[in-house]
Length: 372
Image 1 (tube, rainbow, N blue to C red):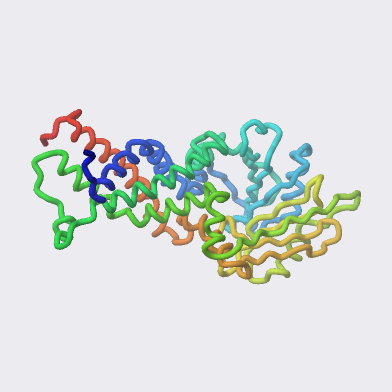
Image 2 (image 1 turned 90 degrees about the vertical axis):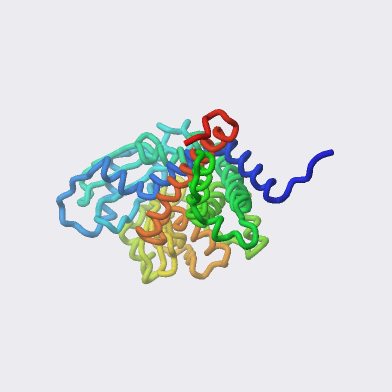
């Protein structure tokens, strides 16, 4: 006759099995995520750029001209970032032929503030912070790894919830359950530390896990959001056949876009390509929480200067706005340094939970001595 298991014992077993099965990969994801909270700053420290010019506003025409002159075979669109820090212009060229076997590995270029010099060039994944990013997002295994990370996230949700219910005290024992006890054995002391760290970081880890899952596997999670809330609005992607006619200057396209969406901050510019005569500009509106990757887009015809489309995230569906919050919440940028520090500590806390949990399991199974 099979003995019945209480919900508490079931939660403990589920917590144990999930921890032992996905714990190593989860620890890798957590620690790499802690590093990535400050990855632009870390990259700047590792790759300092000595720029002594006093220019404050990028010369977009000069920057674009320099890219085309230095990389004449790159006929596709360039993406130029407006960092808002100084006028050094980071630029990306997606899908370069040199890294076509590597999946996502754009060419990364940094132009000097006077746009007269390419001061740094590298490929995504070939310098430290982007290697760590690939480790965090895909475990260095491309699209398949991203799916794996997404499903590890789902297992992590069950891990957190089962851990909470495994600890959940009986009526009248809340104070006792929250205290450190006088221990004479390793197993009891390890339990107290595991409990304390788990309860401290339970909510941050839930937030990081939910947002991480939604970012990693949107095809699987978007239908859930759509069913629960509303449809998702996607920005248009206009196609205009290029011609021998000269494109309007990039600076003119910027002025047209800024006029169409006043009081918004320009974040990214996508230039025309040999297949599409469109400037696509990305803006952060006042209500948009995402600084680096906001979700308002404006398209300008590169041949005529006509305003082709305006996609203002503030006027889109509730689900679209929810999705817009995922990235800045996941990387902590929405809450400034206070939230970023909490996120960093949460990543290390998650790793600590794994190591303490495994050590306690080794003690319980008598692989390690129990006495202090």
